[in-house]
Image (cartoon, rainbow, N blue to C red):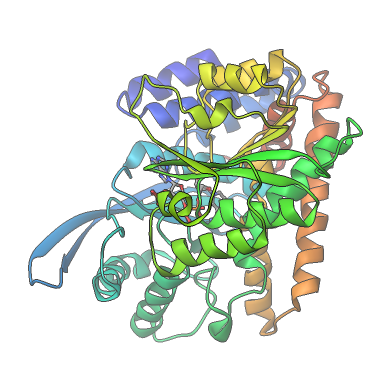
Length: 447
Ligand code: NDP
């Protein structure tokens, strides 16, 4: 296993996020390879994407200036279904980040129990501060290349950071025009053109369903629990809503400029205000502290400063912003303030050191590939509805989502138990996700 990791590092030495994601999975797979030595060849293949596409995206801003961004699609693994995974538009996007996200997606999609392979894509374009028409021109240019590489039975992208309903709409429109067909080639679509009810809510709701199951193993619940949430985008907003549904009290939210701490709790009215701020006015979270009394705003500071959001005294922490936002020292701050559970809403928000701190201190810890799988699961349900040419009700989709999250929890929990690591959801999720892909790969032959 060590030699596989060393080879990955030597081949692409400038891809630290990808190395991190691979190392974490390989660390868990030892006992599986002991039982099934033939799976070693599967592992060797799985760390290399099946295909990587990189392309140029020229677009003009409102003042007539040309910009040239870079676009990517990483088609990582299609052993159990068409490639499936989001598109991220953020200035930090590069191949290392997209390969880490695509690799994680393979295991996550397998865990949902639905027939979806793994992929990820995006661009270093920054939608912040751009007009709607600039975003539209960018999306059209992006899709003018991507469309030839995707398809309802081939690769079905969705949203991620910086790609919400607006962007999916522009991307879908361009695909439809170029391909001259109306198919479920993207998920996260608007309701009038093939979207699914509950898809916007799914990742955040699913995260809280998973955390609820995890808490229940220790006879705990969200009722009366204080909760720290980071981020204030799609995942954070709906995690906050579901925490409120279950009787919890969210006290923090953040964006890249800093975080707010509201001791009285972010209630439904305040959450509606945040949703309007972020989704319609596209403002900064600092404005929350200017609008509501008794709220502190703390500006974010670059490393090595610690993010004091994680020093907040809470029962549950839900990091929902971005990768590597909780390091080992920040994890210790959470442990010192008595946190009992941490569930990742974002992808890989906790560094390996942070995860170790949680596990060593008996904190319940849910890795994103299990706890944030509700988004892609509901995307899978959107694909089914598109193929069936029908749409299910809000309650039907929510019930299916809840059932999937309960199953993912059970699968990760039982698998960890079976391999002698009770309560270790990291190992449980990695092994359970791997087994299905490994069996499918062996059955189809190494390709
Ligand atoms: P959004 O773009 O809606 O929101 C992202 C939030 O995180 C914003 O508040 C943003 O602040 C903050 N953020 C982004 N980058 C940074 C950074 N470098 N430093 C600090 N804050 C940052 O994205 P989503 O909510 O969709 O995604 C959040 C996370 O969840 C990502 O890791 C994503 O991969 C993961 N995820 C999302 C799914 C989905 O269905 N949307 C599914 C599964 C996982 P600002 O506006 O200032 O940038």
